[in-house]
Image: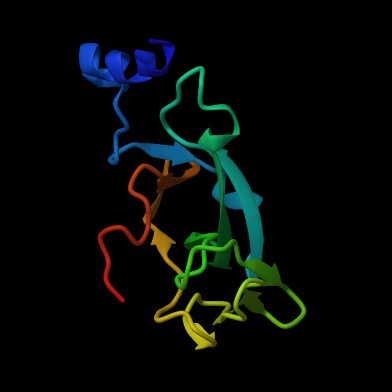
Length: 142
């Protein structure tokens, strides 16, 4: 009975259902230095008391220049392992099967069929926001 509570909640109150069109803030644009890529942790835009750590996520924010960004999902486009950013070589690398991506997220080598998935982003009220509920890659093909 307790396992069904979150499902019942969504059925009773649809406003608690995940909203793929919800923007969340990941800092001010001025928090990011031009020419850098940083890992940013965030909480998904919906939650329930039973989510625990599963409601936490991360992305890489690449500040190309002031006011211009790319925001990448941390997951490799091959099988979803989390990629790591290596600032010295300016590459993202996947430890699972050797996938490598250039700093702009495009595929460099290895088994990934495409580049890294990107979140839509915008600047609103001096906040950098991503469309976090719209998970990158679910609507895109290779």
